[in-house]
Structures are given as structure tokens and as C-alpha cells.
Image (cartoon, rainbow, N blue to C red; front, side):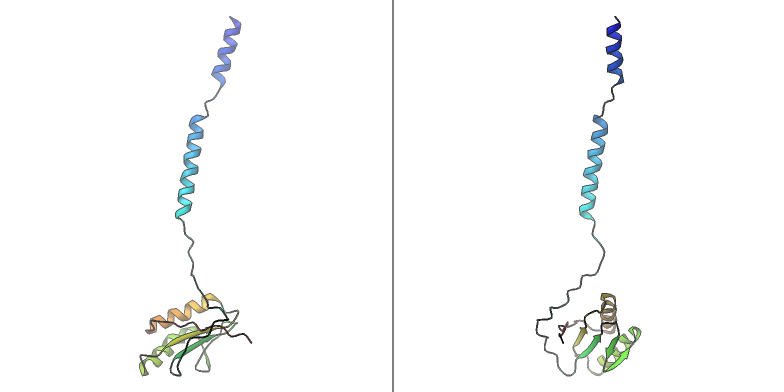
Length: 136
């Protein structure tokens, strides 16, 4: 009779792990599915290769140059980022069909590039040309 009591006590002491494993697997599947739908926020910029030929720009196109230390040059003078929109709007007022291009030097940040393009679009530019960087 003692043997039966020991065996009954051993059976009662075991814990069933099946429900816990089911919950763990469901959580794993949930996190895998959620992770596939997450997208990182960012700005995709595709700068042209330096070995490409620059697009044909005429003498009347608006050219903005961003130097390696994030200085913005337009019409052979340095301007502030807040003045880009006003300068482009002034030039577009004289000729609305002008082209617009942005030249960037090595080391120019994407933040400055995005700010210049945003200012140009607010001024009324629809298409931005991306001339390639020239190696010196």
C-alpha cells in the first residue's frame, strides 16, 4: 500500500507544460508576423554615380551647389537655407520654364540636400535634375 501512495504522489507532482509551450509558440508567431510589417522611417536618396555624364543643362537653368561642409551656393554667392525658396521663386518669376538642378560635393549631408529640394518644391519646382559629382 505504501508503494501506491508514493506513485500517486509522484504523478501529482508533475506539471503539464503543454499549455505554456502553446502560448510561447503563439507569441513567437505573433512577433515574427509583426516584425515583417515594420518599416524603418527614412529618406531614400539615390545620388548619381560619379562616372555618369551630367544631364544637359542650358544657361538659363537654376543651379544650386551644396559643398562638402554643407554651404549652399547659388548664382556665385553663398546663401542661407531659409533664402533658397525666395531666390528660386524670384528666378522662376522671370522664366517659369527654367530647369533646376542640385550639385552636391563629396561630404554634403542628406539633411541639407533634402532641405534644399523641399524649398525648391515649395517655390514651384516640379522636377529636380541631379548632375553627377565631378572628380578632381
